[in-house]
Image (cartoon, rainbow, N blue to C red; front, side, top):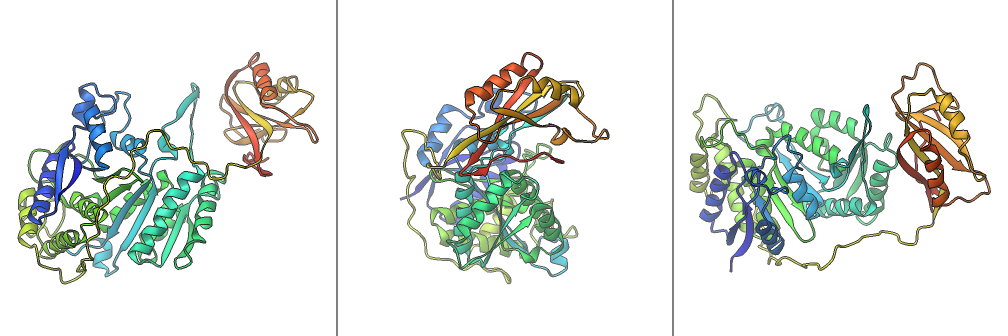
Length: 485
């Protein structure tokens, strides 16, 4: 019995490379049946603000798997990226990208005889990709960076399970917890909590800027790396550059109920319709999908045929030996099909036994709410009130002092995160948005109502841009100090 999957051809070169990949699947007798769904630029243009039809959404949620070509989000129309939206709406929390040296794809490292074989696992639905941004003043924009304990745990546990499945012995956590102490700090803390469950895997962490330096100088140091969303996005593209570019970078977006396999490169509109696009990234993503579905024998056969074809020097115009004539998309697919059953001289993939595929699991009737520790003791200890003002710090402090209640005290005023009152420097340049921090006095208690009353009082003198409670959780502070505080 064939397994049904949803297929979106994509925009630009998408239909051409998708046709080539599906033709290779058919030649390998992969037991798949395709339901084509309507997604992408033309559906934005037709008035579908999400970039997909209602029927497409229903089909993908029913089948639980989407295989998609590259898609374009129209610029300047106020719509969200179809790619990011799909990942977030369906909670595909882990983005896995595999990078390795491919014979026939020359890079600096392949020429130096340094093999690369590493996997990046990127958190896929949180971080700055929530797209929650506001202009607080005409000069000051703020974006919220959301990192959650449940979201971190999902992707980190997936990374450990993936490492164990692949036979890796090491997993590193890339982060910037030295600066973003609460957001990246939570991600790193969760990493080491979960690492205790995997004593067979060597766990380590590395600051992301140091990671980037080491990846371009000693990539062989790493087997697998797990990162937050934005950092993982940047690092995974860096790694694509190590192995020949995004044309050789497969991508899987894994969720508990729905998963998406896609090429992460662009739609290349400049060559669309010319039949010369390179389908390798989409084919490699499809191979990841076949393994996910349990079709491991077919995946190995196709991958070996691809590797053999590359070894023979067959290439599209975007890579390979320029002294050897390039082939078009269809001829590249034909070469892979003709090489079915052959194995490369280097890097042969050994097929594992097929795994019975589970149909799409649950179809939930309500949204899942995940709380890691429901009995946490919470305490309000103060408030940060963000205001718009062109006044000097001392002038703000005088006004803020008049807004105090009997339970609160004025602790600090900062500008762009740097303390400017009660101490600071006249060399600190200011913008027209300040943070005013009030904290409760020792031995006093404060309530939400009292905090909001302070913000309301300040609104008599300033535009209040934002209010953030200062909290303690099980006695641990849940906010950061200002630079210089």
